[in-house]
Image (cartoon, rainbow, N blue to C red; front, side, top):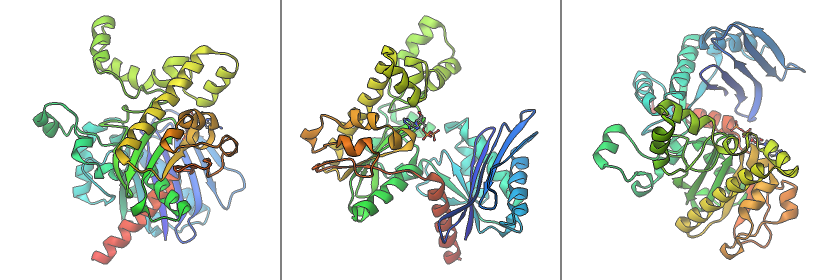
Length: 397
Ligand code: ADP
C-alpha cells in the first residue's frame, strides 16, 4: 500500500509518502508561504541525492498539492495521484471523534462544524483535504485527529468546573492534543518493555515547541495536560501553559488589552520566550551556560512544571510502568529529562545520569519505574491509522 500523509498549515503543506509494507518513506517535502508572492518548495525522494528546491508563487493549497503530484510522477514514484491507496490528513481538532474517519460529506461537515474550536488550524486542514480531493478524487481520504486518542478520558477529568449547561452548549471540555504522538510512543514503549499495551501504565511527555503530558492506564488515555485548546498545561516555546484565569481580566483592566491581543500574548509571546526572550530550548541552554539568569529561570520553570505533572499523573495512575520522553526536547535534552526526574526516588523513579547523557532508550537504573526516550513519528502513525481505516472500511463493504 502507498499512503500519502498530508499535514496542512494555514500557509504550508508538509507531506510524506509511505510504502506501508516496508514502513519506508518514498518521498517527503515541505511547501511554505502559500498565498504569498513567492512560495518555497523543498522536496526529497529516494531517487534524488539532494533535495529539490524551488521558489515560485503558490497561490492556494490546490497548487501545493499539484506540485506534490507532479514531483511524485516526475520522480516515477507513482503514475498518478489517483494510484495512491489512501491519503491521510492530520486534522488538529476532531471534536467528539474517538478514532480516525474515512472522509465523506458528513465527516467533512463535522470537521467544518468543529472550526470554532480550532479557528486557526481547522480552515487550513479543510483547505488541504479539499485540495487533495480535487487532485485525487478516487483515492480514499482519512482524517486523523490530534484529539482522538484522548477521548477515553473519564468525565471527571475532561469536564471544566464551569456552568454545566454552558459547557454542553458550547462543547467546552478538555480535548487534549498531540494524541497521535502519545499513542505512537505508548505503542513503541510497550514493544520495548515486551508487555501488551493493554496492561501498560505510562506517563508520556511530548516536549517539542508545543508540549503536553498524558496519563495512560491499561493503554488508554485517562488524562492529558492540554485542554479545550493547546494552550493549557506544560510551559511551551511561546505558550504559557497553566495560568490563573484572573490574570486575563487583570491584563484587560490594567493594560487595556483586547481579547485577540491577550490571545496573542498567551500563545505567541509567553512560555520560554516570554521569560528569557527565546523559544528555542537549545538557545535557552546556551544562554544559561553563559550565566543568563532569566534563561536559568525559564529552564527551571519548564522542568518544574513537567515534574508537577509527573507527580499528578503518578497519583492518578497508582502504578507506573514507564515515563516516556519524546519530541525535539524530550529526545535530545538530557538536562531537561534529568531536572524533571531527579529527586523522585521516593516514587520509585531513579534516572541514570550516564545513560541519560547518552540519550539511550533506557535512562533509568534500578528504578521500579522505567524511564524511556522514544523518538516520535507522527507521520508514520497517521499512515498506519489511514491504512487501518481503509482496510476496516473495505471489509465492512
Ligand atoms: P515541533 O513541536 O515544532 O515539531 P520539535 O519536536 O522539533 O518541535 O522540537 C523543537 C524543540 O526541540 C526546540 O525547542 C529545540 O530547541 C529543541 N531541541 C532540538 N534539538 C535539541 C537538542 N539537541 N538539545 C536540546 N533541545 C533541542
